Amino acid sequence: MMAKSARDRRRGSESRSVTSRRTAAAAARARRRRPAAEPRPPGAPEGGWRLHNGAILYPNVRLGRDVVIFPGAVIGRPPMSSGATIRQVSSDRLAPVEIGDRCVIGSNAVIYMGVTIGHHAMVCDTACVREGCEIGNYSLLAMGVTVNYNTRIGERVKVMDNTHLTGNMVIEDDVFIGMLVTSANDNTMGRVGHGTGDWLERGPVVRRFARVGQGSCLLPGVEIGEHAIVGANAVVTRDVPPRALVMGVPARVVRELAAPGA
Image (cartoon, rainbow, N blue to C red; front, side, top):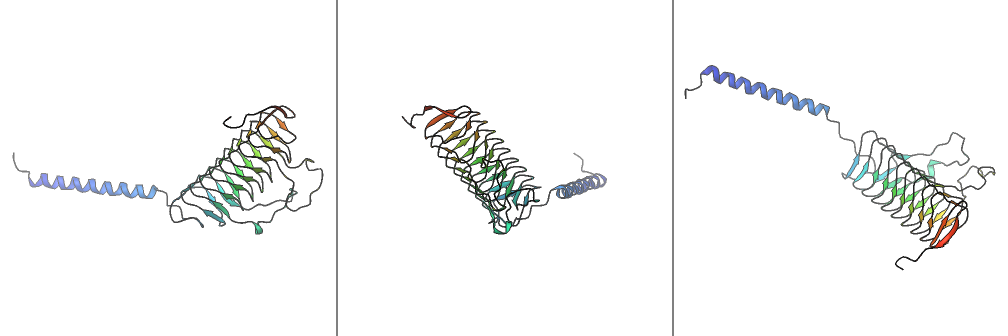
Protein backbone atom coordinates (compact mmCIF):
# COMPACT_ATOMS: atom_id res chain seq x y z
CA MET A 1 0.00 0.00 0.00
CA MET A 2 1.15 3.54 -0.73
CA ALA A 3 1.92 5.80 2.20
CA LYS A 4 -0.63 8.53 2.93
CA SER A 5 0.21 11.89 1.46
CA ALA A 6 0.72 14.93 3.67
CA ARG A 7 -2.65 16.29 2.43
CA ASP A 8 -4.46 13.10 3.53
CA ARG A 9 -2.83 13.24 6.95
CA ARG A 10 -3.88 16.89 7.39
CA ARG A 11 -7.48 16.04 6.40
CA GLY A 12 -7.60 13.18 8.94
CA SER A 13 -6.27 15.40 11.71
CA GLU A 14 -8.80 18.16 10.90
CA SER A 15 -11.66 15.63 10.88
CA ARG A 16 -10.71 14.31 14.33
CA SER A 17 -10.44 17.85 15.67
CA VAL A 18 -13.93 18.78 14.41
CA THR A 19 -15.41 15.59 15.92
CA SER A 20 -13.74 16.32 19.27
CA ARG A 21 -15.11 19.90 19.31
CA ARG A 22 -18.62 18.66 18.47
CA THR A 23 -18.49 16.08 21.27
CA ALA A 24 -17.37 18.68 23.79
CA ALA A 25 -20.12 21.08 22.71
CA ALA A 26 -22.78 18.34 23.04
CA ALA A 27 -21.54 17.49 26.53
CA ALA A 28 -21.72 21.15 27.55
CA ARG A 29 -25.30 21.42 26.28
CA ALA A 30 -26.26 18.29 28.24
CA ARG A 31 -24.78 19.75 31.42
CA ARG A 32 -26.78 22.97 30.96
CA ARG A 33 -30.02 20.99 30.48
CA ARG A 34 -29.43 18.84 33.57
CA PRO A 35 -31.48 20.12 36.54
CA ALA A 36 -29.53 21.43 39.47
CA ALA A 37 -29.29 19.12 42.47
CA GLU A 38 -31.91 19.84 45.11
CA PRO A 39 -30.48 21.41 48.27
CA ARG A 40 -30.60 19.28 51.38
CA PRO A 41 -33.75 20.30 53.26
CA PRO A 42 -33.39 21.34 56.91
CA GLY A 43 -33.64 18.32 59.17
CA ALA A 44 -32.77 15.80 56.44
CA PRO A 45 -29.84 13.42 56.99
CA GLU A 46 -26.75 13.67 54.82
CA GLY A 47 -27.77 11.71 51.73
CA GLY A 48 -30.39 8.99 51.65
CA TRP A 49 -33.43 11.13 50.79
CA ARG A 50 -35.02 12.12 47.48
CA LEU A 51 -36.92 15.37 47.11
CA HIS A 52 -38.53 15.79 43.68
CA ASN A 53 -38.88 19.16 41.98
CA GLY A 54 -41.90 21.13 43.15
CA ALA A 55 -42.13 19.60 46.62
CA ILE A 56 -42.26 22.13 49.47
CA LEU A 57 -40.69 21.52 52.87
CA TYR A 58 -41.20 24.04 55.64
CA PRO A 59 -38.30 24.54 58.09
CA ASN A 60 -40.03 22.49 60.83
CA VAL A 61 -39.49 19.10 59.14
CA ARG A 62 -37.26 16.21 60.18
CA LEU A 63 -36.69 13.46 57.63
CA GLY A 64 -35.37 9.95 58.17
CA ARG A 65 -33.12 8.14 55.73
CA ASP A 66 -34.22 7.12 52.22
CA VAL A 67 -37.41 9.19 52.34
CA VAL A 68 -38.93 9.93 48.91
CA ILE A 69 -41.14 13.00 48.44
CA PHE A 70 -42.84 13.38 45.06
CA PRO A 71 -43.63 16.63 43.16
CA GLY A 72 -46.19 18.99 44.65
CA ALA A 73 -46.14 17.55 48.17
CA VAL A 74 -46.26 20.09 51.02
CA ILE A 75 -44.67 19.02 54.31
CA GLY A 76 -44.93 21.02 57.53
CA ARG A 77 -47.81 23.29 56.51
CA PRO A 78 -48.98 25.45 59.44
CA PRO A 79 -52.72 25.45 60.21
CA MET A 80 -54.47 28.73 59.48
CA SER A 81 -58.09 29.80 59.70
CA SER A 82 -59.82 32.76 58.08
CA GLY A 83 -62.21 32.81 61.03
CA ALA A 84 -64.73 30.56 59.26
CA THR A 85 -63.85 27.53 61.42
CA ILE A 86 -64.97 26.94 64.99
CA ARG A 87 -61.72 25.22 65.92
CA GLN A 88 -58.80 27.63 66.17
CA VAL A 89 -55.28 26.26 66.60
CA SER A 90 -52.05 28.20 67.01
CA SER A 91 -49.05 26.80 65.19
CA ASP A 92 -46.78 28.09 67.97
CA ARG A 93 -47.43 25.04 70.15
CA LEU A 94 -47.13 22.40 67.43
CA ALA A 95 -44.10 20.14 67.23
CA PRO A 96 -42.05 19.67 64.04
CA VAL A 97 -43.06 17.07 61.47
CA GLU A 98 -41.12 13.83 61.84
CA ILE A 99 -41.03 11.32 58.98
CA GLY A 100 -39.29 7.99 59.58
CA ASP A 101 -36.88 6.03 57.40
CA ARG A 102 -37.92 4.78 53.95
CA CYS A 103 -41.28 6.57 53.85
CA VAL A 104 -42.89 7.61 50.57
CA ILE A 105 -44.90 10.84 50.31
CA GLY A 106 -46.97 11.06 47.12
CA SER A 107 -47.56 13.93 44.71
CA ASN A 108 -49.67 16.81 46.08
CA ALA A 109 -49.98 15.21 49.51
CA VAL A 110 -50.23 17.75 52.34
CA ILE A 111 -48.85 17.05 55.82
CA TYR A 112 -49.43 19.68 58.50
CA MET A 113 -47.24 20.64 61.44
CA GLY A 114 -47.06 18.37 64.45
CA VAL A 115 -47.44 15.10 62.50
CA THR A 116 -45.34 12.04 63.32
CA ILE A 117 -44.96 9.25 60.74
CA GLY A 118 -43.16 5.99 61.52
CA HIS A 119 -40.76 4.16 59.22
CA HIS A 120 -41.77 2.48 55.93
CA ALA A 121 -45.11 4.30 55.84
CA MET A 122 -46.83 5.66 52.71
CA VAL A 123 -48.92 8.80 52.30
CA CYS A 124 -50.12 8.58 48.71
CA ASP A 125 -51.03 11.20 46.12
CA THR A 126 -53.42 13.99 47.23
CA ALA A 127 -53.79 12.62 50.78
CA CYS A 128 -53.98 15.17 53.60
CA VAL A 129 -52.91 14.70 57.22
CA ARG A 130 -53.83 17.45 59.68
CA GLU A 131 -51.88 18.68 62.69
CA GLY A 132 -51.21 16.48 65.71
CA CYS A 133 -51.71 13.13 63.96
CA GLU A 134 -49.59 10.01 64.43
CA ILE A 135 -49.12 7.31 61.78
CA GLY A 136 -47.42 4.05 62.68
CA ASN A 137 -44.76 1.98 60.94
CA TYR A 138 -45.66 0.29 57.64
CA SER A 139 -49.04 2.01 57.47
CA LEU A 140 -50.62 3.17 54.21
CA LEU A 141 -52.90 6.11 53.44
CA ALA A 142 -54.08 5.65 49.86
CA MET A 143 -54.91 8.37 47.35
CA GLY A 144 -57.24 11.11 48.50
CA VAL A 145 -57.44 10.00 52.15
CA THR A 146 -58.05 12.85 54.59
CA VAL A 147 -57.07 12.56 58.25
CA ASN A 148 -58.27 15.26 60.61
CA TYR A 149 -56.47 16.63 63.67
CA ASN A 150 -55.10 14.59 66.60
CA THR A 151 -55.96 11.19 65.12
CA ARG A 152 -53.75 8.22 66.00
CA ILE A 153 -53.17 5.45 63.46
CA GLY A 154 -51.31 2.31 64.51
CA GLU A 155 -48.86 0.07 62.69
CA ARG A 156 -49.58 -1.89 59.48
CA VAL A 157 -52.88 -0.06 58.97
CA LYS A 158 -54.30 0.29 55.47
CA VAL A 159 -56.75 3.09 54.70
CA MET A 160 -58.01 3.01 51.14
CA ASP A 161 -58.84 5.71 48.60
CA ASN A 162 -60.97 8.78 49.41
CA THR A 163 -61.73 7.78 52.98
CA HIS A 164 -62.19 10.47 55.65
CA LEU A 165 -60.88 9.87 59.16
CA THR A 166 -62.30 12.45 61.54
CA GLY A 167 -60.45 14.28 64.30
CA ASN A 168 -59.68 12.62 67.66
CA MET A 169 -60.07 9.15 66.16
CA VAL A 170 -58.05 6.09 67.24
CA ILE A 171 -57.15 3.26 64.86
CA GLU A 172 -55.15 0.45 66.39
CA ASP A 173 -52.64 -1.89 64.72
CA ASP A 174 -53.42 -4.14 61.72
CA VAL A 175 -56.72 -2.50 60.80
CA PHE A 176 -58.09 -2.36 57.25
CA ILE A 177 -60.44 0.44 56.20
CA GLY A 178 -61.93 0.29 52.72
CA MET A 179 -62.43 3.09 50.23
CA LEU A 180 -64.99 5.89 50.64
CA VAL A 181 -65.49 5.28 54.37
CA THR A 182 -66.61 8.33 56.38
CA SER A 183 -66.44 9.09 60.09
CA ALA A 184 -67.61 11.90 62.36
CA ASN A 185 -66.98 13.33 65.83
CA ASP A 186 -69.89 15.75 66.34
CA ASN A 187 -73.40 14.40 66.83
CA THR A 188 -74.85 17.93 66.86
CA MET A 189 -73.39 18.76 63.42
CA GLY A 190 -72.34 22.17 64.66
CA ARG A 191 -75.66 23.16 66.28
CA VAL A 192 -74.07 23.40 69.73
CA GLY A 193 -71.17 25.74 70.34
CA HIS A 194 -67.85 24.29 71.47
CA GLY A 195 -65.83 27.46 71.97
CA THR A 196 -62.88 28.39 69.80
CA GLY A 197 -60.19 26.16 71.33
CA ASP A 198 -59.14 22.68 70.31
CA TRP A 199 -61.95 20.25 69.49
CA LEU A 200 -62.36 17.62 72.22
CA GLU A 201 -65.27 15.55 70.91
CA ARG A 202 -64.20 11.94 70.42
CA GLY A 203 -64.18 10.22 67.06
CA PRO A 204 -64.64 6.47 66.51
CA VAL A 205 -62.23 3.90 67.92
CA VAL A 206 -61.27 0.95 65.69
CA ARG A 207 -59.60 -1.89 67.59
CA ARG A 208 -56.89 -4.29 66.39
CA PHE A 209 -57.49 -6.41 63.28
CA ALA A 210 -60.93 -4.90 62.62
CA ARG A 211 -62.15 -4.55 59.03
CA VAL A 212 -64.36 -1.72 57.81
CA GLY A 213 -66.00 -2.25 54.41
CA GLN A 214 -66.16 0.36 51.70
CA GLY A 215 -68.73 3.10 51.91
CA SER A 216 -69.41 2.59 55.62
CA CYS A 217 -70.17 5.46 57.98
CA LEU A 218 -68.84 5.48 61.56
CA LEU A 219 -70.69 7.91 63.83
CA PRO A 220 -69.10 9.81 66.75
CA GLY A 221 -67.69 7.82 69.65
CA VAL A 222 -68.54 4.33 68.42
CA GLU A 223 -66.07 1.50 69.05
CA ILE A 224 -65.36 -1.28 66.56
CA GLY A 225 -64.12 -4.30 68.52
CA GLU A 226 -61.09 -6.46 67.79
CA HIS A 227 -61.44 -8.68 64.69
CA ALA A 228 -64.91 -7.25 63.99
CA ILE A 229 -66.10 -6.68 60.41
CA VAL A 230 -68.31 -3.81 59.28
CA GLY A 231 -70.09 -4.65 56.04
CA ALA A 232 -70.05 -2.34 53.02
CA ASN A 233 -72.29 0.76 53.25
CA ALA A 234 -73.26 0.05 56.88
CA VAL A 235 -74.04 2.99 59.17
CA VAL A 236 -72.56 2.25 62.59
CA THR A 237 -74.50 4.06 65.32
CA ARG A 238 -73.46 1.95 68.33
CA ASP A 239 -70.49 -0.13 69.50
CA VAL A 240 -69.64 -3.28 67.58
CA PRO A 241 -68.60 -6.24 69.79
CA PRO A 242 -65.30 -8.03 69.14
CA ARG A 243 -65.47 -10.68 66.39
CA ALA A 244 -68.93 -9.56 65.27
CA LEU A 245 -70.08 -9.08 61.68
CA VAL A 246 -72.42 -6.09 61.36
CA MET A 247 -74.37 -4.98 58.30
CA GLY A 248 -77.15 -2.63 57.35
CA VAL A 249 -78.60 0.79 58.17
CA PRO A 250 -78.33 1.08 61.08
CA ALA A 251 -75.69 -1.63 61.45
CA ARG A 252 -76.84 -4.74 63.33
CA VAL A 253 -74.97 -7.87 64.36
CA VAL A 254 -75.50 -10.57 61.75
CA ARG A 255 -73.35 -13.27 63.31
CA GLU A 256 -70.33 -13.90 65.47
CA LEU A 257 -67.04 -14.60 63.76
CA ALA A 258 -64.84 -17.52 64.66
CA ALA A 259 -61.65 -16.79 66.54
CA PRO A 260 -58.51 -16.66 64.33
CA GLY A 261 -57.16 -20.16 63.81
CA ALA A 262 -60.33 -21.83 65.06
